[in-house]
Image (cartoon, rainbow, N blue to C red):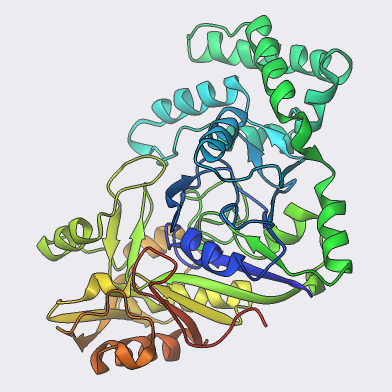
Length: 429
């Protein structure tokens, strides 16, 4: 059986963790292909609530392997912390594997992330400060330290770390006038990581390829969202990896034909964390009400999220970039009780109407939304488990989103737990 990708269709925080957990019971492995601890996936099931930043969201299902691919940058402290918590709460983590090719987020990456963002001042991007960007910079610049290097500290790791740290300390002290980091402290930290992670480190691209060759079902877990893609998002207000489906092939070492389905996850409205244009943003009392009702605060940062109406122009763009075969609509229940709901169906800029998502971020920042207004519904959708339980006006809203984006809605989420889900059609046979 081939792989099925679960992709964020907006600016992240769409509810991928819940959807992956819902689908994971039908697969043999959930594999994470990009991003780092800047991602935050919340999973709610009969074992409780789990907030995961490094561990794949299918970890709670017995017998399902969790794989962190080569495209991920690994914060070993966060990963080990999550494994310890999961073990304490009775979740088996022996089936969790980390690619030896994945790059490590080192202490100097975290420090430089903070120093660089501070130096940007009013032009700050809104990074989480987790060191993800600097780690990807070193990966591309061929100065990175990989997870597999932990297994050979005195051989391959020490000389590369000494060279890298000499360069980083020059930046830290001479450019940012901060205190240099100690090679001894970092080597001790690496030894600690190696001792605890060694049983989990393997050549995961071979593992994933073997699973696919054995006709096993594999769920490909995206992090962040398509509109934050380093190439296809609203640059420079983007993440440092490729959350879109193309990143899955690179981040796992699998061919494109291994992916049979691409599921785009969208909130029933829009949110964004950090800087950058967001045409449908609600800067009024209703926006504040929506934020508080939905408790829209970042899982990773705790920062209040910007909120807006559903942007169908951006959503259609995400569908085209990823070749989505189906949609998931989450948090429909949050809109219960609103007198009316809006959908952005176009942009007005410089006296013209456009229906495509601009690649020029400056142009996107000038775009004014063109809205369709739809009647709201008073009957609750919360906890509904079948389409027949949805109010007619809520279903009309769902159908209009499906029409505008150009892809069938296969799942509607009506709450945070597994059970609060409407499966319109099966994603995984």
